[in-house]
Image 1 (cartoon, rainbow, N blue to C red):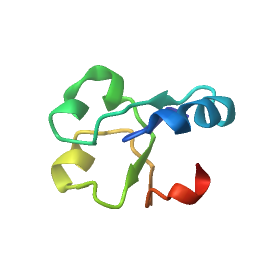
Image 2: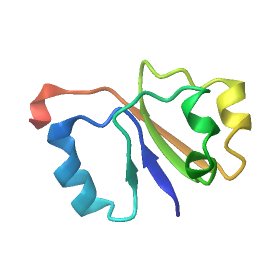
Image 3: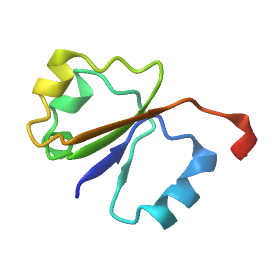
Length: 78
């Protein structure tokens, strides 16, 4: 399943790469502009943060999307 994590902090990368080996880790926020690429259009799962704007345009631009995960950054994990 093609999974993309948006707004990945540098300190999160190692754990995410270990846990989700096939996932794409993106430092940028989710926007209608950056999901227009072919790489993102294949996403079946996206992980965004609570301030991300997942609009109808975003969802429509991801034809294979099956699941959206959202959470808040927390410094406790550092």
